[in-house]
Image (cartoon, rainbow over all chains, first blue to last red; front, side):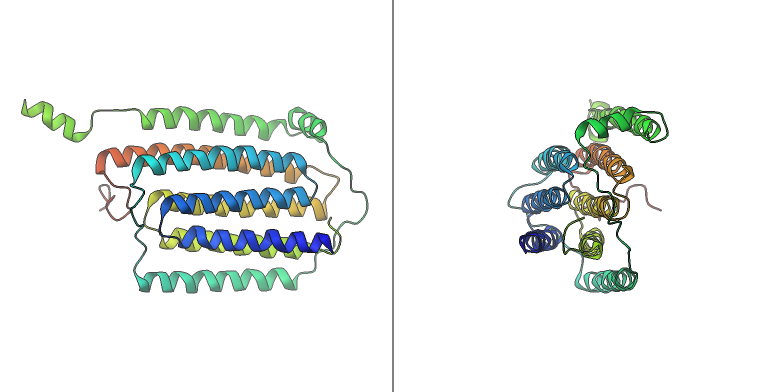
Length: 178
Length: 105
């Protein structure tokens, strides 16, 4: 009973706040609504008793990425600015297309009967997860770990290089004029 | 697995979130809000990974690690995208997709 109540509460929060994220005209508010969506998702992981994943979701997603997005919103737009949406016709057709896709996916999901594994349900603590992450044995995931660490390194270097201050076109023209 | 809550409930939530993200991606005109829609999409995929892991293969850890990898990809994507957006803002004084068409045609 309590399970269902909590699940429905979290589900409603996720849906309402994700709709608000894509519909609100104020950009900073959209970021805050997205923060609520991410925190509710962490609540789902807590309900599944995956505490480590919920903690990662809270720290990296809700903590890191949202702060990064909020900073870039503050850097690039005025707070009073209203976001421009697509023209009505385009919004209508986008809504129709997404509704069609959602209906197709939902029908497919609901018609397929998943057989849940009701047998063993081991509780993984953070030590098991960490050991499996760096282990190169049969149940180890060292290769994806290395791949994603190279990706993170490349992304870090790339974003530093891209965001580095270079003389813009205007600066160069001003220099030529002198 | 959670008592009384079948797997399909999780899938319904993540499907709804995925398509809400797609709708936002199609209708938003500001680059940062488009990035936020992409984050919604990635987050819904994470819910799928974790729910499948819990309900269908609770003795394995695949869902855990792919969720962690998706989070890492989302973080690096956000970092690179925001670097590009800040650079665009420097050059065009706007981050509206309608104005950023220098390399088109």
